[in-house]
Image 1 (cartoon, rainbow, N blue to C red):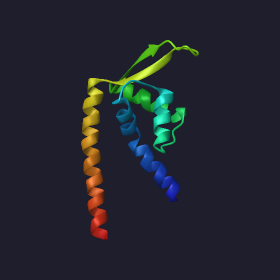
Image 2: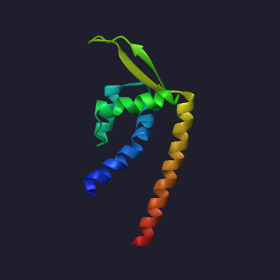
Image 3: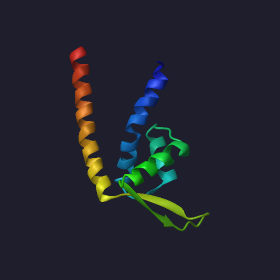
Image 4: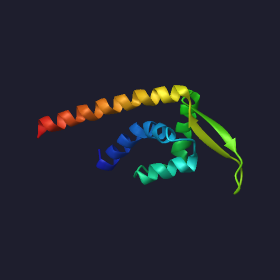
Length: 110
């Protein structure tokens, strides 16, 4: 297995968490989410993002609203639901535990 493949798998594993974290800062249009992920060096294309947004919406973690645009068709803005906020809080805790565990293992190996 190549390092690039490994990196891609690790990124996919945290992508939903990152999307929810972005939306915890406020409503966002899909291209806004892609740009914030790109700024964090997580390159994601629309073909990857939209299925994740749909799954998160179907799980009731997200909702959306349509807003008229001055430059083209209406835009779909996503936001966290109360259930999504609770799920994100659980993911935050899981992330801390995972980082702590990996850090502990790395320290013991050095």
